[in-house]
Length: 128
Image (cartoon, rainbow, N blue to C red):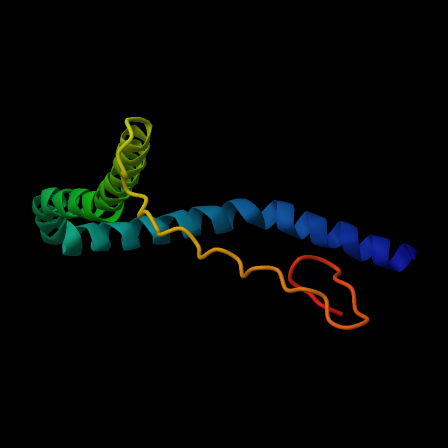
């Protein structure tokens, strides 16, 4: 246990004493890479600024097509169904047929049959 503790102290000392050197070297390397990248990509950044307005316009049209048009279609369908129900109920109240199609009345039931010999009737149509 004591042996691993000594190694932990030694490792901590090593990290604390060498960290500043490593950080400075890493910062210099990063700055050098960044400057090279900026020089290479300065022209493409200007091109990107020009195309930014085109991208915004395209995004606006995508939003209009994907959201607004389906909402308008759903609203129009709802208004059409609502108008159909309203007109049907209005005509029905005023005595007109409206949307409901009138059907002829059902045929009358057959006349009752008399009971047979030794039989009796359960109702008007069934002879047992």
